[in-house]
Image (cartoon, rainbow, N blue to C red; front, top):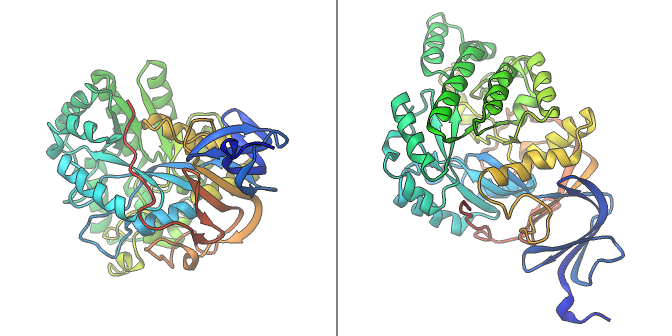
Length: 459
């Protein structure tokens, strides 16, 4: 008999292990919050706890590169770290890389420390911080890097008074500063002047329907902005990340940039892969996001890009507005805030639409939603089932059929008008482990607020 010292804390057995280069039937052992071994069933060590994953895929916990929580904020009715992290856990996300759109934004050490104190008390999954790239951040990037920010987010279009648009010269100077420590700049890429004036034209004509939102933010606005920031990255040597790509027309720009040696990655989001302008027309402002949903033809071509390996990652862009945030503006889609909530839906949507309907391999989905985001954002101990890495694990019943309803979501923003409401899905998250501890199982959160930890960038 093996001694108790050789025992694992937990063994997950009888599951389909989704590894970086394929899948295998086997067992996974966990010790002290880390993956200790990947073995055959017969060679699995004894353990204090055994999780039978029969009939399930054992995937690396997801690393969401693009989540919005908005805490601290002056909008207390919106998502906070407790509700947002609970929704993440229910969706198999074990690390949220959270955007800096808090009030105040993460522009300096004080703002970083303030948010860190909130995370330590509330989150149930692990978190990493984006820093803010604004004019107010100039001169503070080195200290934010020391704090542990994994990247820096800039809005090229007009955003909000709390997080303003950054002019070109300020962006160029910031990229020069950030490149000094090999930092990463993430860009919301839309031409501010084009979309601002296009929207004014529609408003002046009294056009408020959903389809107009896409027409007011044409693909040329996204293409021009992507082209510009690629040139800035090439000039400064700064690492670049294109957030939430919506248009397939950018694929040539990005491919050519990579061929020239520009260090650029690109993400897309589930809503661009499963929704389109038909949903925007049907749901109006409740399907409004920036960049906008595009045509059905564009949506299918994005899947072709994904299959071809032209996306580096998928992020939720979870933006949890309440019904009232939009209903208070009547039918004026221009005044409604943009964004679609979906922290708990990314993996089920990709299993349903990607794995089942389009035959995309589980290991490719794991690369896009876990491994590659972790690597790009300096979290090498996350995002993969590999001995020595954090035991962040998601158990998925690939064949369970269910219907999404806002009533069962942990998210604070209960959006009854969500374009995902009532959607039938095949594939469901059954259990989520963070550093070896079960944080979510079968509809319940199993840890206390504050269990999650803040992770900082590894250079």
